[in-house]
Length: 174
Image (cartoon, rainbow, N blue to C red; front, side):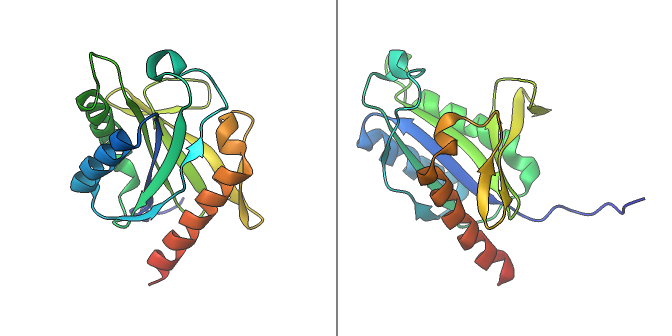
């Protein structure tokens, strides 16, 4: 029988899908008030792997990722997803979202994303929030599963998460 112990703190990350930079900057400012200083911000990438958000946001969407310096308890992911949903609503215009905010966390072995949608590979957390292991770390890099979103399978995204993992590894070492 294994002994029960508290989980190691993890690195909060947030992904954004958006059209206008000013909405991204507003979202980041609000998130910093909730979760503290950002220690990594990716370059802005084109979001071209699906047209799922075009009806709501329009065309020429972009993607960005940030990570936060303060580490979190992994059990807080559902609470964080509820907060990011409220921020999306706050930044909406005429009841249409202007940004999609996807929180998650990574540790040395995996990247976990929160979702409001259930599916065969997602586990219920609480308050209508599910979690999925989107990437796993093996042979010195993140790897993807069959169910991983197509954009998360790209070399550009994998490189971003490897960089954030390096930041996290230094944090927990120190």
